[in-house]
Length: 322
Image (tube, rainbow, N blue to C red; front, side, top):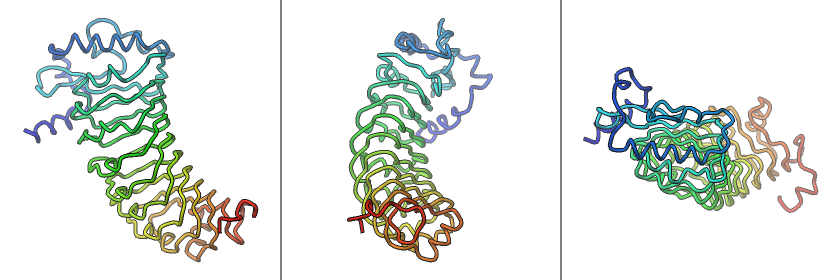
């Protein structure tokens, strides 16, 4: 049964088919779902694009930003995609709680660039949810642990909100996650060693308040290509283990408090297209391989404390960091 339900999840990621258009909305939830959307509409007091103007009548599937398709029974329609990206919706009481968690057949939720406030509700019952994009809202609270129970979640973007506190190590142990964007928040603490188990291709942790070293295990993440650790409070030496990474193309650790030098083995990575350590406190002269990367425009070490290098910090800023 599990493979069949997974197959349903994958198939219904496509747009509604003509056959599904002849079906009716699931009668067991139709009244409640319609009431939930109308309550959301009541809380939307800022709607510059007028998307809620057609949120009238009983056909929820015709509402702008809402998309239906066949449910698990293959006989009725359910709401499966919410796409409010870039609608700039706002309201003093516009929250995701009391709304999002009620639609249990959702596969995709995109609400980027709006003004939703408050905490993320418990989403663990939305079994097949595979994409969540909450970027550029005003959401707050700790990391929403309920998403860790979504075993089909492949894309999670919480960037540019006001989340705080540590990130659970379990986030990096998710075997399905392909893209993880947690940048531009207020997350704190050290980056867990479990980052080496991450299966994602892209990871963004920049513009937070992480402290401690760059984990040596980061190079063990088997599929990781792009990493953003910039604009944190990371300290210590650059791990030489990064040189053993298989797929790194983009590594940004600029604007931290890293010291020492760049291991030559890191500059041997043939897949690199961008290696950024600008605005740190590196003080060891570059080796020949790193010099070659710098000459090719791949490595940026400006605003450090490297003797003889161009565009470094004033000596007064480097005192005590050697």
